[in-house]
Image (cartoon, rainbow, N blue to C red):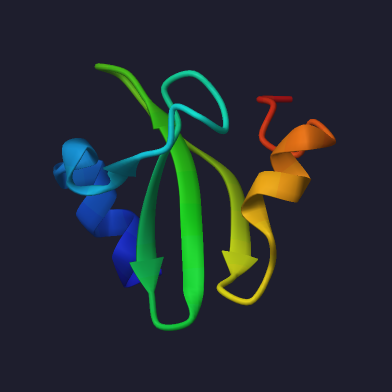
Length: 67
């Protein structure tokens, strides 16, 4: 995915989503949100969601926990 490459080079480009999970960020590619965590060594894609999905409800069920 091109979008993931962008976030690997510019990890702070995604909007913070701290209310869903600590350190979580989201960037968009078309109709999809790419939710990810990053540190100095890696970028971990946690979930890719269609924009019509309710991310807040999913977070309430533990849907953004790093496995």
